[in-house]
Image (cartoon, rainbow, N blue to C red):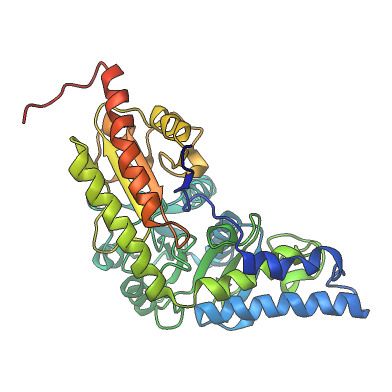
Length: 391
């Protein structure tokens, strides 16, 4: 009987038992509209504000600085578009970002370029890092915003966010980070790290899909995301997703407690997996640096292997992984992240991302290491591009 191994936690995570337990009462018993003044509505409002407090506490922020959204993508869009709408009349029309951001940032930047904004796309090095010095050199008197992801969703590299934040703070430029992959994996303190805005998403930390948040430092003016009711301090109209917000609050509280111990355990599994794959499978390479890397991220490319075929063969053996970002899994183009770190087109097409978390076990890693070499050998045997190298 084949084993089932879920190793795609960077794409989404299962709802945890504590999160589900917190949510269930708000599906049946405590279902009031948070804008209603009777007790059922007031109970719902208190639940939302408790979730806001938990989310804020996990980031060392104030509850008044947390705006709930429907996703990390929505939070990214709001941060960038709002900032430029406010600062464009003041002559600030320049954004600085990197060339391997999530598409929620890159596509929003392209949209803003069509509106007349200028965008600088900083290159990352071959290990997938950008430096504070690059950011400092790119800042001009017209710069409105720097937006750099905390940790890359495909290759797991963690950027020097506190140092970049300090550079921006000293230059008087707003700094936003997409921390969707980082929240719950690394300690985040928005005050100490000079972060002005931060995006996060619930489904990466065992909360439901369809809920996220945007942290906005007090004093930063935000334009409305959705006009309508008075929800989210008049900035995002629409009846709140009560049940999911309760889940997000619980997930934030749980994910950000005990990070060092949990990260150390997951990183040990990650390193076993990386070392095992690289030692057992010839012509494979790790993508992204090993030192500053998300604890559960493994991204490896295999010569003469096509990523989609690899995923299908692994699925037949009960292993769930990805060939890049889940948001672009339907694309035939190679990963823009892997191209940004200098991989040739044909190598980028043969990438595999395995992302572990606290639910994965040594037995999961053993099974992947037992299964993957045979899958690679099978696919290479069919590939006209594969030429075995002599020892």
